[in-house]
Image 1 (cartoon, one colour):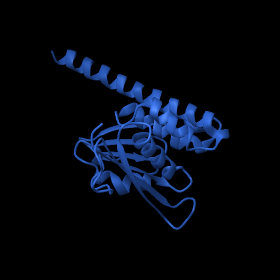
Image 2 (tube, helix red, strand yellow):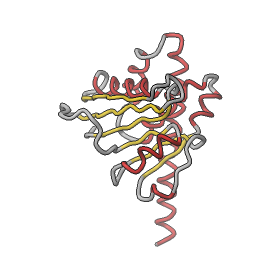
Image 3 (cartoon, one colour):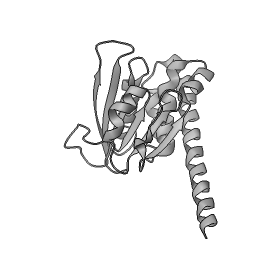
Length: 195
């Protein structure tokens, strides 16, 4: 794992802060890395803008704030609009396809979408959206290993919700791996067609 600045953003009630905490625990407690997290949110408990900024590294972190995100996890249109333009040139945008409509400004940025809110509904609890997105983050990037992430989840949510959150994580992870596989196939086909 190398240094990564991660912004997880949405609105209050989506579990944004919990996702940041679980990411930080995964890296700093259940992996061999370091992590810091800062958070900010609007005055409303639910519905207001909410952001977790997580810095991860394999070395001690000297500056705990995100300067220019390498990864943006957007769970609302407002979150996307606020943070997308700040993504690093080779950044990664992950978003819920039913909650975010990206514009043409994401050219050059790798982006993957997932119907996370729908998956959470299908699992029987819309509150599982955040763990679907966390699994998607793990599946599309090398930032965390799934085994370490599951350990962090198991100690971060109430016991009656552990199974739900594990299933939500697995759903996002598998979908993310599938997106990478589809992208690899498309690149191979494109290369073959050009030659």
